[in-house]
Image (tube, rainbow, N blue to C red):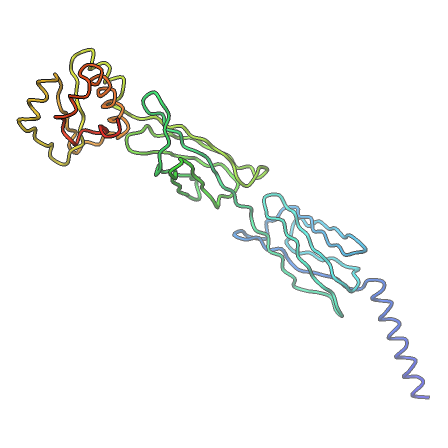
Length: 288
């Protein structure tokens, strides 16, 4: 009799367990963690759970805790696609018991600003490397530099508004801004134009030619270099003056534009013979 009773109890328990599983008595509960932030302030977040048979969806608002019930055994995919965060797709399997303390990590999307710095030099445009960019807001500062093609990329930015400062010695500073809304592509394009801040340039060279006050410009050191007697003779012969900036910083491109305008004028007036006696440290003669 005892053995029959035990057998019946076993049958009943097995049937009940099977029925419980068939009806979905399992659940998954856990919490959402946000990288770099207090996970208590998630806002409304939709969680989707699906398998081959069914799709479950819940929304949590005031807490980072969640619980999805009435589940059967099997494999499920949990998905979260929240604005401003990288999409999450993770897989979980239910075997003989519910899943507790399940953690899902949400990472904020990071963005990049890419672009090109165009330099207005004289009457033309140039590409220069090593131009610095400072991208910042009240929380963080990021730095970038242009490559040999004038291109730059500043990465690891969160959504928000950023100020941008662009500068290089000898050029006018540029202040601009950009807003990363989070709706856009992870890479946002920004092209920036900067201008030479020139005390000397092509226009001054033309003015000096007209006035008869031609100069050939030189970068010296702490102390300006001294003309030799041959240099003085050269100056008198071609009615010009060597001008050494010494340690005063002037943009190379500015000086180059001035000198090359003078070179063109001298070539037209004297042919190539004037080049024979010129000082070798005059800027940009080899490239003209």
